[in-house]
Amino acid sequence: MNDILTAIREAHPTFKPSEAKIAKYVLENAHLVSELSINELANACDTSEASVIRFCRTIGLKGFQELKIKVAVSLSKQTKKLDGGISDEDDVTDVIQKIANFNKQAIDNTISLLNIDSVMRAVEALANASKIDFYGVAASGMVAYDAMLKFSRINIPCTAYQDTHLQLTSAVNLKKGDVAFGISYSGATKEIVEAIQVAKEAGATTISLTKYGQSPLVKTADINLFVSSEEAMFRSGAMASRIAQLTVIDILFILVARKKYNEVVKYLENTSEILSMRKIYK
Image (cartoon, rainbow, N blue to C red):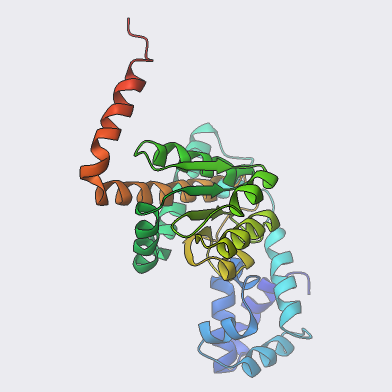
């Protein structure tokens, strides 16, 4: 069995009804399978865990874990694919359009995942925060820095920490009324999870921004905001996820600024004025 997805596709007509539902879901959502538990897959297919196990055995696998591994291997064999489905045969115009389309799709997928109640809880916490810590490393660290730049403009004390020691040092000194905002696409970055846990134990409200699904960060944070979990096989610095994360930060910033408009409009005007003085005009 060289390619499990091909094997499932070819055997589809022979499956029993419950197996056919599982096969359809796996083929249409192969990129999600490795993130699901057997119970989550069964619920998504409206079947039972026993049906999932029978399906695995029908296609010659020992169990659900082997299915997850085989699907991941199958996806990794999609050759000549770069960000946005780009191939080595594409010209510059094709590359430009495909990247634009891929980024737009990442934003659309993320918007569809945002839970309005969670967004409003996050806005309430951020709007009333005495202090905000944004934690992120690598590409997510850039998102954290962007968030700090935005919220600083409305005079909410905030800092973006990429250094993991500084994250912990700040987190342990937070208190009730403060907010710790952890950004991690995988939701499994050890240092971010630890910082959020420490901040939570210190009394701060904790918010996560991560890919959709269960993860250590999601299980730790008080409020969870999700971005689309679909990424291209070769990611240019987590390109699509970073753009999706930046979009969520923009949404939160505008909602917080709107909520506190009468209070923050003067700060927006002041920062716009002082920054305009740094420009060179001919």
